[in-house]
Length: 421
Image (cartoon, one colour):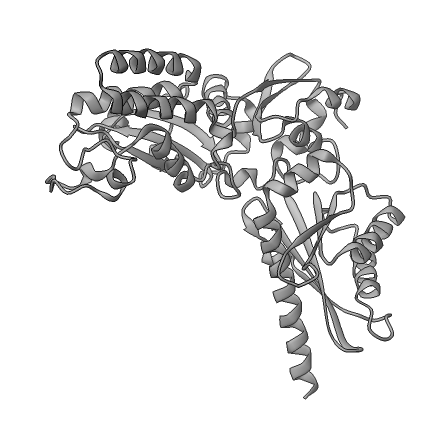
């Protein structure tokens, strides 16, 4: 257990931001991002430990500081800036070349934004890329590292915020508006409506300032430009700037934070989800399934299947109890951060009884199909507001886990039926 006082966790805000772990020497040893600081930081002090270096060394933590942000995107940027500047040892130890990503600005007439993996940028000196490497990659600036960043979703977000264009990849401008121009997300590189100088001023410079963590200064600059455009009667440009400012001020309100945005944030603290389902043919052929998901998706080598042994007749609730009891007796299996079951209140209540019997305080949620079996209804085994909020933000992920548990149970049952024939 860490030297950090558990009761201090209640002081953490339920907002996005970054958290900073310090050791007894007042050294920053780890920095992380979160959609909910309270939920994320609390997760380090409850449940089972994973193999992540920082969790193995959580006992070193004697002080935790935090900084809130207006959005998860800004938390990601702030985290990257701290990692680059401070090089906390457990961020470095926990680095995975496949999950550390960077964004580069290309050295072109109309610069593009390109993503890179750690192995593509090579070794950085004090968090900086050498001139020769920049030249080799064809970029002028590099931003990151962004641990676990889903670059596809990020590019979609940045395009909406900054009108980034990639029609410059076409060697000759056809004069025909690209799809993004038609959608109002390109300023006209494809049609020759914007010069390279204007493009760098209106697209690249604001983007760079934002990626450096200067959103407030950027908004001030954009407001001045909007006023200037309005005075010059350039009303279309003034309206565009007004909309851009509004989007930047309300990033968290424009449906840009979703399950695919940051792969590491499959979580806000969740590194392991276990999903359960029961499948039967009447009173016979009863089986149960356990599937496991972590921050990278399904962990199929940790799936488990159960042939029901003690239940007489047909009772999904009793079958679920048997499966969970047998599972909980396996002390060698890593405990999850979340239990997910296919079922409503009866299943959730029984599952909670099993967890209490084994003295495990782990969040649990069930998914019922609703009265008409057309709608997923989430049934909670806890009233923790942080967990309820996390579930509401990750419903698609949880349904995916439920569906996988159902598929795995059905597959096992069919296999057993074939063996009986």
